[in-house]
Amino acid sequence: MTGPEYEVVIVGAGPAGISAACVVAETGRDALLIDDNPSPGGQIWREQERHGSNWEAAHWLRRLQLYRVEVLRGATVIDGDPDKHAIVCETANSVSTIRYKKLILATGSRELFLPFPGWTLPNVMGAGGLQALVKAGMPISGKRVVIAGSGPLLLAVGAYLKKQGAHVLAIAEQASWARLARFGLGLPTQPYKLAEAVQLKRALFRVPYHAGAWVEAALGETVLERVRLSLSHRRWEAPCDYLAVGFGLVPNIELAATLGCKLSAGCVQVDPMQQTSASDILSAGETTGIGGVELSLMEGRIAGYSAIGDRLNAQWLFSDRERMRRFARRMQKAFALREELRHLPLEGTLVCRCEDVSYQRIAPMPGWRAAKLHTRCGMGPCQGRVCGPAAEFLFGWHCQSTRAPVFPARIDSLIGHKEE
Ligand SMILES: Cc1cc2nc3c(=O)[nH]c(=O)nc-3n(C[C@H](O)[C@H](O)[C@H](O)COP(=O)(O)OP(=O)(O)OC[C@H]3O[C@@H](n4cnc5c(N)ncnc54)[C@H](O)[C@@H]3O)c2cc1C
Image 1 (cartoon, helix red, strand yellow):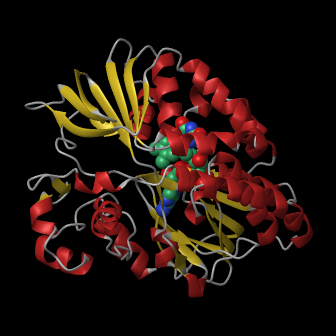
Image 2 (image 1 turned 90 degrees about the horizontal axis):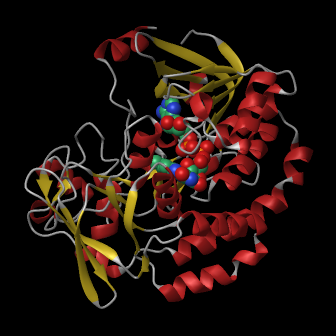
């Protein structure tokens, strides 16, 4: 495989990828940062370049410019050959092979969707997805929004939508008050998180927040009209324009798995230097476990130092990373999904929305492989990114099967790179 060669190539320009790239580039080495979005920032800072107001994002994006990091935008890494130290990258009108000495995978995470009656109706969206659409300019002012699911992302989305003029009718958090209280007691040991929580609470003043509550159904003929929630001892139903749902995040491990990196508990397995089991491939950020933006930044820095062989500077950051990982583990425990959510789908509820496969067709299958062979679930354009994690939760199946291309690609891209 021929193509340009870089000392360090980083896939994913979220906080982890950006901080890794800065560490590499500030020592004068050449770093290439690749992302499939039009601008760097990842899920949380994606609109910062256009109309940003987040000082931390501004700081990191400025550093990217300062150290002249080369950023390849709108480019998706679809395949690679670890033996040849090469990855294949598709853009809107080309495909290219890029060679690396070290590769850092910082491909982040996506939202976890669970099926419930009506979840495929128009205007039922992922919480982060709705936020992203609004950040990209979708008008939300005056719209009635219900937010449901689990985790701190619901609060961040609620606060953002409210600020943009949405009428947030309710936030339904499936974790119980008892769990939230236990989690809250630990916050004073994390001043940054505590400050964030206080800020969110202020921003959500007068927005009803229900714990131990979850969405039972989205109702409507052709589009979302009403939402039904289960609150601790009663049902709550209200008309609304949007339902934003998110049951947590799932690491994007597909590229790493295709390149031969070992996985553990659904995450890319890394050693203390963020090195994966594949030689010269490192990984950082939410690809290695869900933990929030601060942990992603920290792991990115460690991966950057590790990639350039600066073990000492990497080791300086180990204790901070461990503190953040401890917090992440507490968060996972506090927001663990409850049993009741496994019983939300009705027989006709779609589980795989790409291939229109209902719960009643999947449920009798002995496992993911049989379900794929007999029903085509997980074989549509999302390649099982949505229904795979849902099936893992619903049926306890092991649903990780990946192969290149890791994202749908043009046929000429596939032919082009094989001929190189
Ligand atoms: C939809 C969504 C919304 C979120 N909103 C918030 C929020 O409002 N507040 C908050 O505190 N946290 C939010 N989070 C969580 C936050 O994203 C993480 O805590 C943190 O930013 C993760 O950083 P990261 O660098 O590990 O990954 P990410 O920020 O996810 O960055 C990974 C990047 O890699 C790119 N990528 C993945 N695969 C490829 C590939 N094959 N080729 C090229 N590029 C690729 C992705 O498009 C993405 O830009 C959100 C998460 C999601 C999924």
